Structure formats: structure tokens, C-alpha cells
Picture 1 (cartoon, helix red, strand yellow):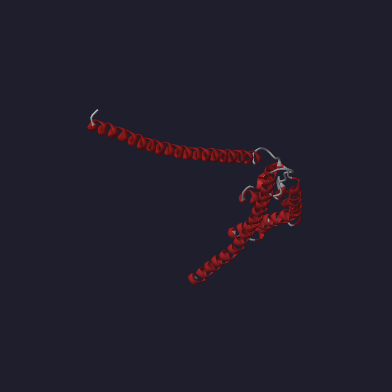
Picture 2 (cartoon, one colour):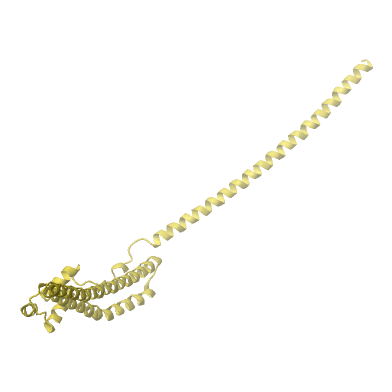
Length: 237
């Protein structure tokens, strides 16, 4: 073999060795990147599993909360009493006025009206015999019936106040007897409803007072009209 051929062969060998070393380094870099990627993917999977576990725990807690606030505890109808109703015949003001006109009827308010009207009867006929003016006759009927209805309602509500106080105290004492969240929430709602009913009762008394005041003011309007008519007659005479 000539000297030139030896140099060429030696060059190929050296090139091959250098190429194999570079290739091996390149493969090592690739493997390192793959391991890093696998590590990142593994961490992501672990985080997803952890998040999934947290979500499952939250769902379990929500189910427990849902179960604890659903169902029937019985507090909604526990010893239910109707302290506020006046009776089916007193659902509106005209019905109440009819009870006053008739001197009673059916229901708690009607019984109270009957009781008071026996003590202080409305003598419409006697008034009409003495006063011929239709406006005055109508005003007397309206005023007397309103006074009777307002007084009956006020006395009826007053007589029930102590019962309502005792009933509220009884419900309050049941707070310690609640055994779970559902019972506690329902009892709290029941006490609030009873309080709202009492507030409505107070609002009704306010409406009765305003009605009576309005009737009283009508007397001033009627008197002013009569004075105007009197002055008109005098000026024309």
C-alpha cells in the first residue's frame, strides 16, 4: 500500500471516530430532554390527580350539605297556632264594616264586635229620627261602625299579645332541641315567620287607626260643606 492510501484510510478512521462521538453526544442530549419532558408530564399528572381528589372532596361536602338542609324536620307545622286571623268574614274592610253593621257574625273579630255592640249599641234608627240630613245619617253610620270595628280589633289583638309572647318563648326554648343543621335552619325560619306575622298584625292596627282618623277628618269636610251651603243660602236671600 502506498503512503498516500495510508493517509486517506487514516483520515476516514479519524472522521468516523469523531462522527460517532458527536452522534453519541447528540443522542445523550435527546434522552436527557425526553427524561425532563417525562418528568414534567408526570408532575402534571400528579397535579391533575390532586385536583381531581380536591374536586371529589368538594362534591362530597356539597352532597353532605344538601342532605343536611333537605327533607322534613317538622318545625314548620310544630304546634301551629293562628293568632292573627280575624275570621273568614273579616278578610277586607267592607266585610268588617258589615260585621259592625250587623252587630256580629262568625269569627274572632265578629265575636268581639258582638260583645262590644251589646255594651254600646249603634242606634242608627234613633239617630235618623232626630236628624233628617242624609249626609249626617250616613256619617253617623260610618263613624259608629268604624269606631266599633277598630275598638274590637284593638281589644282582640291586645288579648292575644300575651299568648303570642308565650308562644315565641316556647319556640325559643326549642332551639336546644335541634339535632342537625336542617332542624336548626327550619326552627330559625319558623321563629322569623312568627315574627313577620306579628309585624303584619301591627301594620293592620296602623291601617285601622288611619281609617278611623280619615273618618274623623271627613267630619271637618262635611262641616265645611254645610257652612258653605249656609253662606250661599244667606247670600241668595
